Each structure stands twice: as structure tokens, then as C-alpha cells.
Image (tube, rainbow, N blue to C red; front, side, top):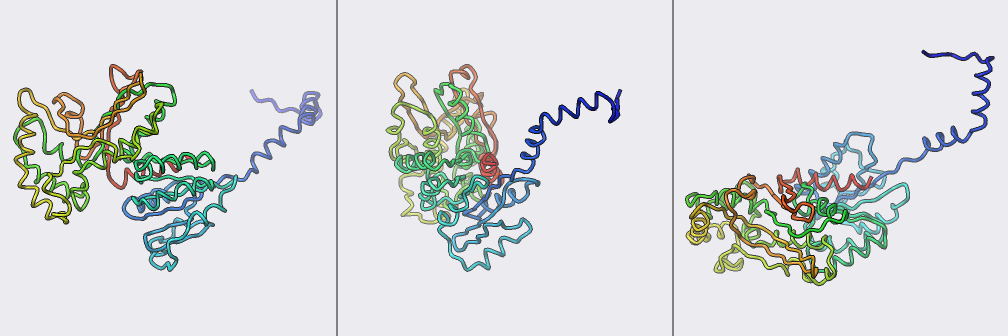
Length: 404
């Protein structure tokens, strides 16, 4: 039942008196409602497949939201507007018409950092030169979000500079998409470590390209298409780099292992991989006679690879013999909690037909297994599409959303 009080009633007068005694209640509400909302200014470098898709996803966010796109840079030109580039604008046309060279974004972005405006630098390139700018940006209070693996898998010196600059400037560096594209691989590992779990082993199929190749080539049977045929199909589908040797050398897996290793705290962490991915023992699938110098083009490499099909065919037959196993190119990190040492390798391994690496993979999927003290009997598994512009851009955008 709703009761309406008359202004002359004693209960109404007592209520009015109480309101006069506590004016701060209404004042607090007024103050909160008039607070200026925080904005997040986004500067994007690299507008290729991933960069363009990131911009599309950012502009597709449903309002209200705090993000405004203020800068776009290609390898040739820059568009910069601190007040924001409207979502309805044809940004590609703006870049084509721009005569402004690639700018010193640190100089342009640093003055925009305020308590009511966060600034995030989104690097969608794979350039070492861009990665080397992270320390200066972070020191200036500019957050960094990127799928660029170079900064986090290169020298320990650069990585240490990034960590120190982040602390000094109070800015974050987020790089979920450097491992597993949009899959929650780094965030899962960070959560395990932050909550006190002891990680003992991480193993996985980290390369979408090599996942596809061995899913098609090694199915548990001694028969199937030749290795060179599968690699050629993978290239035609756009799963490999233009020169397939850039995938078959295993360097991409080694970089991802380095990134993960640096998130696992150990007493002598800085001595584990001093040269980054170059310190990881890595099996190259490139036959020694097919050095890049002798086969500089992708087509020439594929033609020459046919001569080595028998070698890979023998490996497949040996794996399938006597009960059946499959070949998978994997990365493995073993952590010895007793002495704090870490063992890392990227190699071609056999797995039984009943193993998740044999039964659950399809296409260019990634799958990562976390063996920990809490997840001892049954490891925690993260699996899904590990390559592609849409899922990679999603991983980048998810990091940007964390800064709001």
C-alpha cells in the first residue's frame, strides 16, 4: 500500500526536518552526477589486415563508451586529430590524402595524458623499430597495446627497459594477442601466477600455420598427401608467410615460448633467455640444403621442398607404426620449482592418437596446456583459432577495453 503524506501532517514535517539535517546526501549525488567522464584516446600504428580490422571493431563499439580514435599511421603517412576522428569518416581516404609523414607520436601523445584522459598506443606492426619506442611512451604515461612479438621475445635488455618504464610512468603494456591471437593465454597464465598457483609445465601447439600443416599431414596413418603438397595448400589458403620457410624455421614458436617464460617468476629469471627467442633450442623443419640464400622466393622453395618429401613421409610412417601416433610441432616449457630453473624447447614430437593434440585440433587451431599444482591431474587447456585478422584484432581490442 502506498501512503501519501499531507504537508500539514506531523510525519511529513519530521521527514522534512531530517532532510534539512543531512544536506550532504543530495550534495554528494549532485557532485557524482556532474563528474567529467574519463576518455581514452587511441593512436593506431599499422593499418594492414590486423590494424584495419582493429579499427573496424573499435568503431563498431556501441555507445556510450570512452574511446576516441585520434591517430592513424601507415608506413607512409599519419592522420592526427586530438579531438578524435569521427567513426563515420573514411579514414582510408584521409590516410591516402595525408601528406604528413609518420610522426614522433611520443611527442604528440605525451601532452594528452591527463587524469581525465588516458592515452593508448596500439602497435599493429611487426617492426622492431616501433617496439623500441615502447619505453619512452610508457615513461611518458602512454599505455601500449600490441600483437607485436618483437619487444617481448627479443633481448632481455629491451624487455627490462619496458618493465622499468611502465613502473616509472604508471602506464601499462598489454600484449595478449602476441600468443594465441584472441585466445586468453597470457591472461590465464598471469591469473595462475598471481593467485599463487605453481606452474610446472606449459606445452602447446602455438603456430596456426604449423598446426594446419601437421593436422593435414599427420593423421595417425602412414598414408596421406606429401609434405610439400600440404605446405603448398597452406600457402594458397594464406596460412603461411609468402615464403613458407619463415614458418617452418620454428622462430614464431620460439618467440611465443619466450613471451610465456618471462611471465613465470623464478629466482634467476633474467638469466633464463638472455637473447630472447634466439636462446630457445628450436628445431627447424627447413632441410639444410634449402637455405634462404639458395631459394630466395616462396615458389622456388616449394618446388625444391618436393625432393625432401620422402624424409617427412618416413617420419609420419614411424609415428603411425604400432598403435598409431601423430606428429605435432610443439613448444614446451618445464619449470623446476626446486631450483627455479626453466627448460624451453620448440620441436617436432609424437603424441598418441588419444592425446588432445591429436583428437581436438582442427584447421589452424592453437591448443595450450597448463600443468600446475592445482591443475595437476587434469591440465587446464586453452584452445581455439590461433591465427587470423579478426581474432587477433579482437585480442588487441580486449586489451584496450581493460584500460577504460
